[in-house]
Image (cartoon, rainbow, N blue to C red; front, side, top):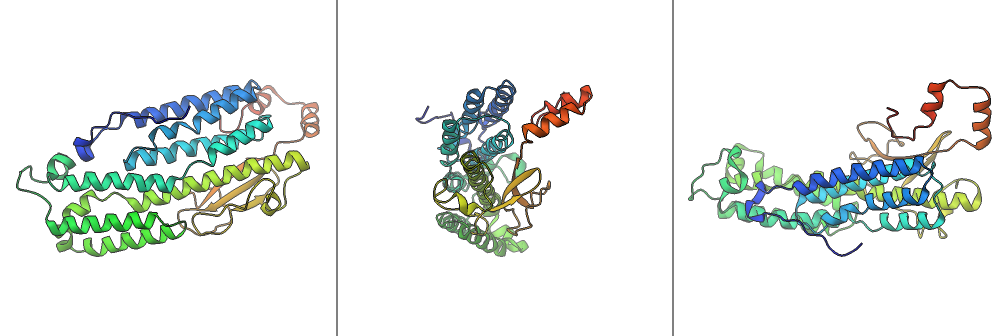
Length: 339
């Protein structure tokens, strides 16, 4: 609906601040995923579109929160939306208008900017933690709960220096942002890699978030959005031309302004056509092109789009005869549990 959403955040609790609404957003995503599957089974393309649009939009309610955890939840929620859209794309008769609306919502996110926004909030919370470490970080840290125990000025100065470096790194584009954040992380580790350094910069070590992992998560989220946008463009091309494009360059300029770039290495995203599906993928967390490997380690970030069998092939298959279990299995959409 637009506008802005606000949730009650107890910032005075520092790093102990609770975020129950973030978990509730995950529950919303599960409900909307179920709704999209049900509408798809009913042959309701418009209803499926509305459910997918809602699923792809709920993360917007968290995008203004200057909290790194909230920004990572945004990435996770959008990942659910992109994956489900990719699974349903071949099986639902979306209208041209539906495809345009879906593309528009996936083009709106910029997860790297969201992570940068979260880091700003973390910098403030971390700075406050230097004044009262035990209160801000909680009793599990083992820090003495004494008013005189505070982070040193030298420690605080280094903390702010690292935070400034991180923010500057994330103001650059991909893949330079990933390179810069890695350098900042190395700079931090040099200081904390000795017993003396861990004591000297104890608060910096305790309060700095895992920003390197967060920026890589943002890159994965932005990569997934670029891949699903391209997949929908391929579907638009297929409807007009009656075939899949041989290369992504065929989508330019009618369906794409240009071939989207892989956030991890700056090269065009990859496109591979197989006998039963086509793949759109980017380099994974190792930032190495491994050929579109589909594995649990996410060696590459792969979006798989099934190629729906032709009606003729389906008729031949049914005339050959299938038992009850085979028919029930065929009626299950990808990603669903038949039970």
